[in-house]
Image 1 (cartoon, helix red, strand yellow):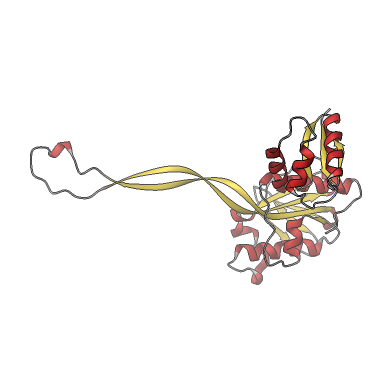
Image 2 (tube, one colour; image 1 turned 120 degrees about the vertical axis):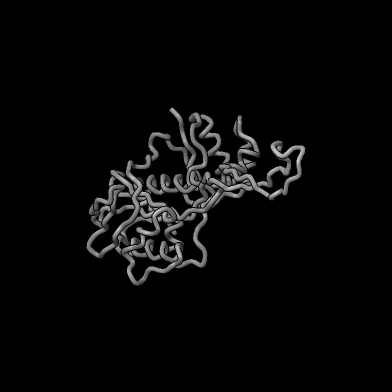
Length: 263
């Protein structure tokens, strides 16, 4: 069965310490250490044999990086759940609307984890490209004509990396979760804010996160939510979508071990 090596806390390990530890494990290189270090959000590696997982764990411990070996099957999986377009936050309950705008009432005590953050996602956007048309027109060959400048219009699909404000609300027992991409549903998502709503997407998102944290103070939070809740000058940026979701899995695992994060 495969094993994972996970951190005991979310402090990012120094790349040089990872490189030194990785030298003691067959198949790992300095490049692997750089990749793992840049994406270290609780779960360092997965899919290892028990022997190699223990070897890496011992090497990391020798470098002062606190980790432990866990059967991969013991790590929680993200619960199923639809994305949603908007919510209503009231002191009595959270109301989540599904894709058909049907309300689902959620008791605040059922919310166990609120995870938010600014996450880079790949987008494929259609771009209009105009190029000058050739002045030569075979139909006019051999006679004088007045050339009229023209352009050819084409559309190209380009891959772009854009930061999105993501939110995941995890319910008790891992029975369900509700995911929100604020940029895709801003016209509805912040409707409940009423007069508090501004024209600034991030400001509205911050108010939403603060409301969620206020109505569910018992819920665990990731670092992104912590930054929004504490009104940090800048949001917490995740280096990748994988880092954002692996931190959620790590937090759920910590909760299952009765070890809430210490930030």
